[in-house]
Length: 186
Image (tube, rainbow, N blue to C red; front, top):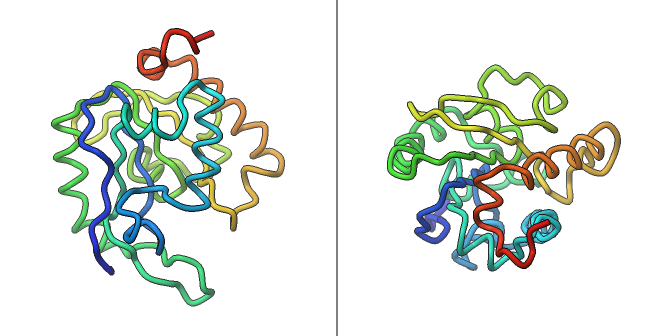
């Protein structure tokens, strides 16, 4: 793993968003989802009433791993190894214990696997809410696909339809709605 450690703002929130790990641009920017994937994800959230600044100031942003894992053999970001995930797990567990989120939004397969370990494929979990116990805390989980430009899953069927369903579910959740300014709520 390559530093620096990247984390979101220390926000007391009923919603916790969990990504995979920072990319090459997040370390220098000093914040998660600072590049292409973030632009896509924040566009999704803007449709639900929270622009990028609203998300960053109202939602606790965490990650499975806190440092850039490096490039993989095919040039994309390397998926963190199991031992790297295990070493970072204590940070995530401590954050969950302190925050006790009512809603967890894991973004991408690796983050989803941490919260919903029995999920085999994205089609099995994206598009609806799941009750789960995560690091000892009972919560609701609304998984999202990774918004990476390298992934076509959220731009082709059935991912496109499942993403729309997931965003609708997220937008209706009481924890999410509690963060949206009243003038934007519908």
